[in-house]
Length: 491
View (tube, one colour):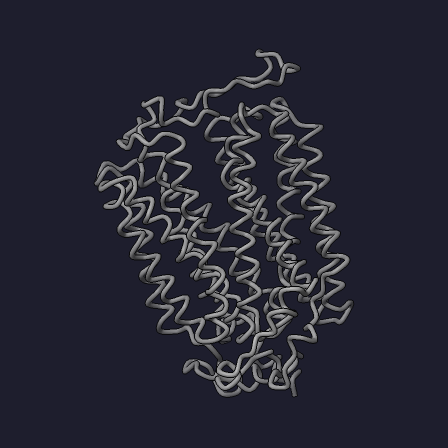
């Protein structure tokens, strides 16, 4: 019966409500990145770069790579090929850093409660509230910035809360709608919103910055806030907590989901009894939390500071810098979803069990990222920028295996408590973001290759530690403390 239903309702079909919901989750994540990133996209045309106090100290440093002679590489100055600066805000580098840090300060506490609220009540309405909060704060961004620096600082902290209320409930919703096999594909799909949002957002924002209407940069906030409002309306109309509540799904597809999903009824939610001690002390849970910490630590470093590495170590001009970033984002986007398809094929053919599959992918991540970063450390300088791109592309491809490896198990080890587990994981991610920013600030004083090598070594050691820890303690199977006789096992 299950085989027949699965053939009747394949996931990869526009007639499948599961696939349509996955696309909606992707739309939500992309818009969250748009709205959260509105300041980072626009700050280059908001701040008066002619004022020396607004320039980050790294911009004015010279390389300490004494083995490279000046005639080998040409350093591109920060004003080369750049449009005339129209920024009016005289925020120094420390003030700018606090604007970005404020977001994480808001995210961390919100993460701790959002997953529990989603598991206990309604992930749909937690996400809806987060989207509306995102929209309001994004649209108010230009007014807050013009009012006062501290008003914008408060705005960014509240945007962090909106972000913290978004991601754990998405995970909680995923296990209600999808089988164990499909949930890994869906997680890879909707987290692709990070790559899509960052790459597309950067491009669109650069075009808006060049406009004279409203000085250009406020349009970034207004555009992303408006698109976010459209997303919230679509979410309110089409998203539901469970397939049973979906008016757009056929009864046959609902029966299929009943057979294959690890889902719960409304009565299950009301009687939710969280085994807090076992959940918090489980080595499987801790392996997931540690994996999220390591993932986000390097994500924030590469997302925030990789352009500086390209400029200060490889001496790339702005156009090359943008091209390299686009290639890296694109390779990560493709690889992430390709690894998810590999997992799906392994599961469909019962080649190996899910735990073994996830550990194989985690080992690929650990080995691949280590080799690629070692290549950057020992084989790359400003005369070999193309080789650096090869290593960074390899890094992106193998790093993406992390998502369908250890990260994906957050959806499978405890379906009843997926939101809570993801809250813990994203709490660790928020801490990792702050530590990543602090690490680069402390170690990257001059922008030299040696300083970047120290940062890469920290990432290498963390990746190896995370992979080894997961190989020993990780699992993709439902844990004994998470089982309930009201859950239908996944097919």
